[in-house]
Amino acid sequence: MQNEININGVNIKQVVTSKFLGVILDEHLTWAPHIKITASKIAKNIGIIRKIAYLLPKKTLVGLYHTMVSPYFTYGESGNVDGGLER
Image 1 (cartoon, rainbow, N blue to C red):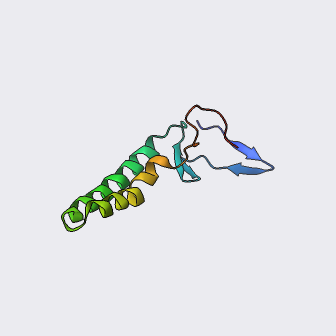
Image 2: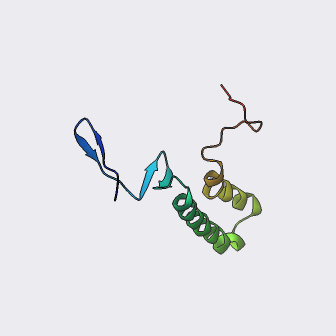
Image 3: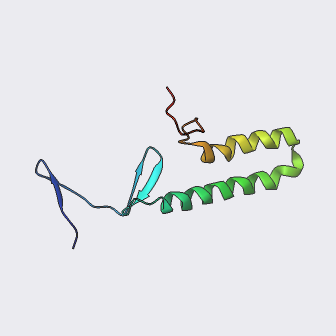
């Protein structure tokens, strides 16, 4: 049985996954669906780069990596390695 949530007389529907600010969480608040989808996108983009690698200079390939792959790893980073808050 599902718990029903009601806010101001409006029933809130329970969903299996939800996307917020580009991050997908499941009903147990794990990142599993987000990781699965992101890994698939990264693999697709790496495949594209590999198929055209013989046509392009190394500098261009590195640029493509930084454009097509790297953002998936850096999205949401705080930018501060020691864990402190950055203002």
